Image 1 (cartoon, chains in turn yellow, green):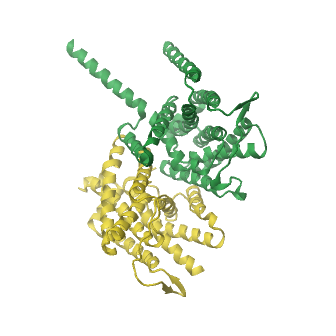
Image 2 (cartoon, chains in turn blue, orange; image 1 turned 180 degrees about the vertical axis):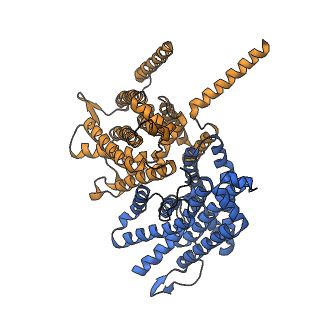
Image 3 (cartoon, chains in turn orange, blue; image 1 turned 45 degrees about the vertical axis):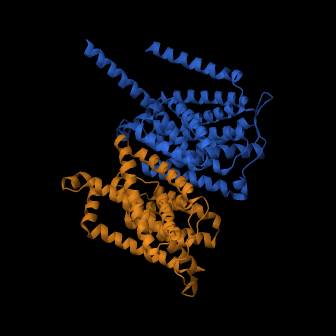
Length: 289
Length: 327
């Protein structure tokens, strides 16, 4: 029981972390909150299932294509909507704009893919794997492994490449970065693209285990922003840690106490952290208020 | 200056008289149910405007207060047989207390985090309704048979009679709002919104007024929720989600224009009308609606009133420029 719950928690926590990463990088880069992050995750899952199930492409190829498509969606989102709303008004309106976009994406997905759950065909045609004496779906292990590979790649991209350094400096001080010749509009756009792409990785990994439906966007998105706050909003590593923490609390409370409490936990933890320690586990100072 | 006030008072009075006698002319039940919803939203958004427009605190969880009002009043009148007007008042006071308790820690948070916090609050209330202790709210089944309001032996169960009650409440709430705005409290709200540090320096107790704004706002919205429960007489959780209520309320306030008496009224009327008209588009309803919000934010971020007055100003300036050329 314990090991089974732990694997489940690690798996779902990695997905929370992937979505939460998007909240944090966007906040770091532009001081904004993107409430459509959960729906980008959902769109990613739907695009993935379209490539893999309906077009019959191999999984690796559909995985890469999904990332590319969602990266472009993220960039377009920033270029067409966010930037134009910001020209005329303040961050308040971005909150409402991204919430409206989230409603928009959800209903768009319902029109295209319908409101019933779509099953993701099995990826590995082998049965369950035995880990430490319990049966585990291979797709579940894939979630943990691929999610962590993605996070490590993102870590190296942000810290070791030239473009990553440019992105970090633009986030720290846009004016100084501009003076050094960094294209800040480009780095901000790419940040949104990366946020969408990382969320879609989460969707592609989540889909094979739980199936894809329009309701996953809202629930996962809310868990993910709770994770980002718990870890320290704006901190990449905080989002991952927060995701794991929330997933562990949630899974074990549901497993040992009552599953009615499951939907309640993430918000209770969120409120607790907002009130007691808004800077999160990683003590991240909010960059902009 | 004095003449201007008189003019607007006269206009308001004429408008009220027209609205009040209109049921004699129009007798469609459907139209009155739509108008009743508009009036409910006028009350709720007036409260949200006091919080967001005047004191500068965003809330994405006002559905939570609306739900406390609706469920509180419905449960009390169902189980304790109290008069609905009394239960409405008690429910709104409970919501005010909840609002104050929430606001004490929340008033420290800046806007992004305040929006997260209020989303969390709304969701927690929603979850409490769905999985209530002892199932007193009967979950997704909802509560049936909520009593109608009776006044002086008259049972207000027809849409038209409810319309009069809601109209009176809306006017009272708007009047009180105006009194609050023009009092010391209202000026403190505005000072805090415009420059928190300066307000603090002037000796305004920022936390106290922020908490007060939350409490008043919760009272307004919860009262509207309670009125809703006794008007529709059936409530179920899906009315009180963020997407179905909190976001539309915020849209109405933004659309009508923040920080004004008539802004919430215009916002409530227009957004409710648009939602009603979009019913005909079926599955496309929410897509068009959300697209519409984005377009409003892109093209008229200061609300429709300032959009119109902006155009009027441009026309005026062009006319004046033309006159100058002629001279």
